[in-house]
Length: 158
Image 1: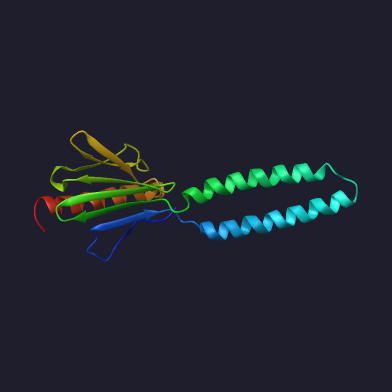
Image 2: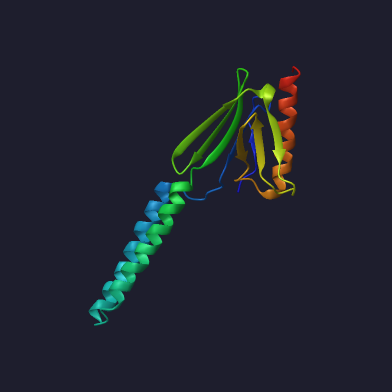
């Protein structure tokens, strides 16, 4: 998980994303290399008359491929909060699907679940959005406080 990073625009833009060590392309290359090694080992054992190794190697690569596919779908997930011309815009990327929420900052409230590691929730009337799923639990309270401070500045003038 990665810390929240306000951008250079006077802390009016936050990008919270996963801390992934491999891009989806690198993950694909890793999978192909694992497939080649596993296939080479299985073929060696087939030539030693151990045919049963080949189906198990296939099942192993199928399971690994499924797990890596799930990882790759979520590797680029993020949450972005930014102020834009009297609007608070929240973008959530989840498995390649972008959801965008727009709120009037004058009507916003920042809430956090009771425990310090609880999720941060933005509320405006009946609408709400939950944030902080990529933050380490001990950083969520700081994020909620900072976002609340910026909202207060927006409500009562800079």
